[in-house]
Image 1 (tube, rainbow, N blue to C red):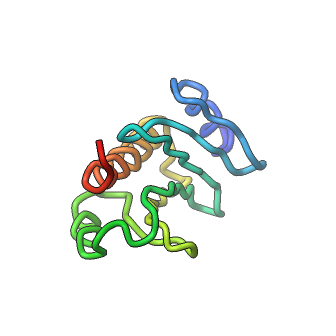
Image 2 (image 1 turned 135 degrees about the vertical axis):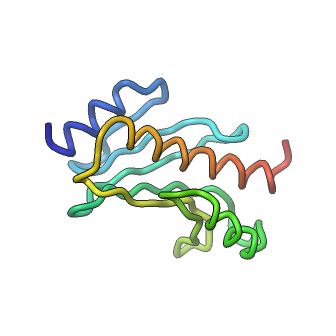
Length: 122
């Protein structure tokens, strides 16, 4: 099974809605701290990259994000061109299996939820 097929297979087993938006790009929409979270996955050469917008610009102190970046493997917080806080990460295609992809997506979701609960009203 190639990387594309592996991602398709794994996403089809999840309860959240996932769709292919380009030949090597997918979107998974789930709930995070009471708000929708759209995680986009993309095959980029030897890597699978994922990212999701988490918070609006200037909603959180950048030092807090740097602190959290040191706590979780595979994922980190960054800022996109619009200034939004995103959670993102990459895993090697060569290591891709259902367990690693599930862990990776779980870490992205948990990180997004943590940031949103820290900042947004509950």
